[in-house]
Image (cartoon, rainbow, N blue to C red; front, side, top):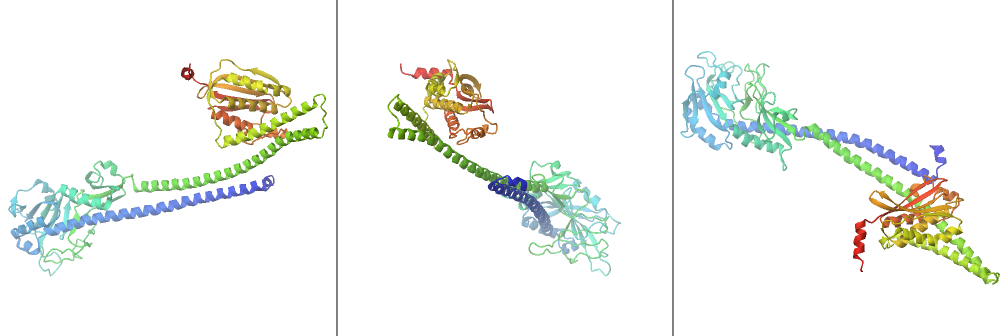
Length: 618
């Protein structure tokens, strides 16, 4: 780096150092942003997972709480069970139907004496408010299979049935509760228990779906703009069937790989040798140890408020348990987090890119400003030289005339007058050029655009410049085509452009005193164009200078090396004028072989010319 810096200006060296430092800072910021985005995404993932876990558990707890309140309302007390006074229980059931805020229970059955041939199936009739004996309902066949008879005249609860729990048979759906008469035992629990029968509450699937599950889904997974997750209650180990879905368009295949899946009720697992913990219950073994903390004289009383407590609920292990399945609507929770991270990275890197672009523009603008200031200094020096030379000649001639050095013989006074006039015109030309450039830069230059003949403008301009060309000893090649299409241009501005190109050719031709002026037509990007070409065989332009020669105050390396003075405004004004007339200027040049400058003007279509001719007064 040091050997390179020795050949760089101090200002440029500091600019390079600043740029390198800024690039390094941006790189560090990009790395830190990437790391920070990863940490934020991980925290967001944990937050969303925790929130989802909380929502699913609350959904499950609320579902169980509602069912607990439901079964508590329909559960008979110990006195009714002991006396088997079903008429009294029927009178209480009507109040239970009226007091429950959900219409989930569709039918109430009593299966009494299930251990002998005198078994009965009683169904509650809401109109008569009594139990009536009915034939066995085929829909309840799974109850007989699930709760088989034990020994004759020894009604005992099957070993895999919880004595104090309600069991959900999801296939029906049905809530089943064994009815026992207990005596104060002197031995192991359940030794003196007596099974009376089973209470069965048949549930309405439509009411569960519309009144309970829909409300819970909206409460825990919905919002002002709808569901943020796809929520479904499915049955079976796989997504075999959908009991409830938040979106009618959901299908089982769309619920694969969910973000969360939990059972709504604990399933009874006797093979594992333990009883699972249900919401509102405690873990106990089937051998009778750690009996449930409830009185033997009646059902457990629910606790006040929204805390745990109340009847114990289990799902029957028949392969039809209900599971709560939750999946993010964007595919998965991971997809949401990844999308959020990509978005944050995109925004962050976009800001860094904007910062880098702003830095680049500021540095480029600063360098351009410095370069423009240098060009302006060169312009001032060039203009000063252009003004000083004719002024020196004028002053010298004036002094000779004033001092009487020049005698009025042989036409010397006339020669001095012509010299003064010529140098004065040079001064006027420089001043006019500067004033025209200032007018163009300020946007005050007005162009009188009208249909004109290019060949006439070229011939008039060559006639004006012919004395100057001949005085410089140039050979001119005139190839002005006839019958060219009209162009919509300003005659004086176009003539000035041709004069500037001729003056440029005269100045940079070196020893090869030859130039050519040609006109013609060619197909351009936007249609037919009229071309005006000025060619010389002078010193040419270096390829590195070609992109800049139309910039104000710019002068090529060849001109500076040859000590050719100028203002650097001529070509800039030619392009600005050509652009204002709807055209352009192009250049082809090779060092030592000369340059070809071409003015491109769009030709007027014939129908426009005819229209203009028809609008002229006769």
